[in-house]
Image (cartoon, rainbow, N blue to C red; front, side, top):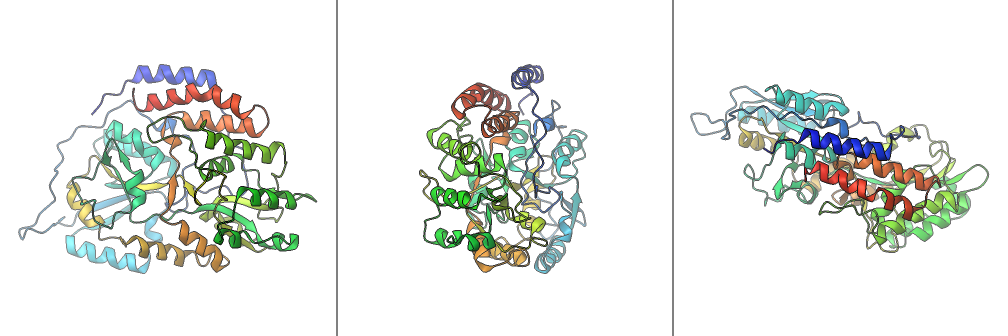
Length: 449
């Protein structure tokens, strides 16, 4: 376990904070994401404060599964604790309840759900591990909080030696995003994220414009079509898209084949593809002036949001609405689902980790496609038409993970720059050049370079 270089980190972060200044609280917007909702709710806050200079307590924890006299795994009535923030036991399907009952009988184990506040998941893991009393064995953690920070500091352990990762039950979302330093730390039974554009069907019909879903299915849902519709809708105190500066900027960056950070731990926000996207969104605010209004009240045509945003406005929204992918940019090759994702992780202090993973594999539907079908079934009451559900089904399992929040201090630096650009305080070229050295310093601090 690498020793944390506390004073070096504090000095560098102090320099970053001095240069950047303190970012104000994010402007409250309509239909903000509720982090008390189920696990697919993405993290949206800077995670700098969850860092600690204290190393986990070193314990001699068994690495072999608990075995009964007959050679079978036997927990002797002990519990496997599952840490999460939404009261998971209240959201289990009947099938999942039956699966857990059978697993408890098979392994002589008790499945216990430990619910803590969303913003307390990481601090609770750290403090309880240091105290030698980890609060849970398997824990849902936003990917940006888990990797690389918790892996570098030794609070979570890889699962490569515990399961056969070649089994088809381990889906591509976890295998492509949950790896650090060549080891698999994050795992999931399915990906149930959806992030795209809600749109006001009633408003579009009145304007005589083609439905974005029809364009999407023909492969013709592009930035040009989006801008055309947004401009047509902006009149009489109505707007083309809600004033969600950061959500739009990030979504359009990835829809144009760009990124905020790269796989080799470098900033990617100043690449040609990313710069083109940031300029396009800046023009929505500063040139075309199509941003504003309130989607739920029918005064904005488009609203960028994760699928659970529907929970907030669907019950009271008078107008009909739909859901589509973000439009493809000029450099985009396909529709994308840019998303901050949450994945499961194994505490580094878990006892009998191999046995715990053996139980885990039997608790939920591990066939990804069946899992996705289950998500859609659960959303039928929240989405108003089959076209929107069809779009959501296509999104599942195809997420492009947004990871820039993984680096200590990076989120605050980048988010402030985007706000400055969208508000017209600075040009994209000048502002992104200004923050690049600070952004890279944040990455290097996190990786302890």
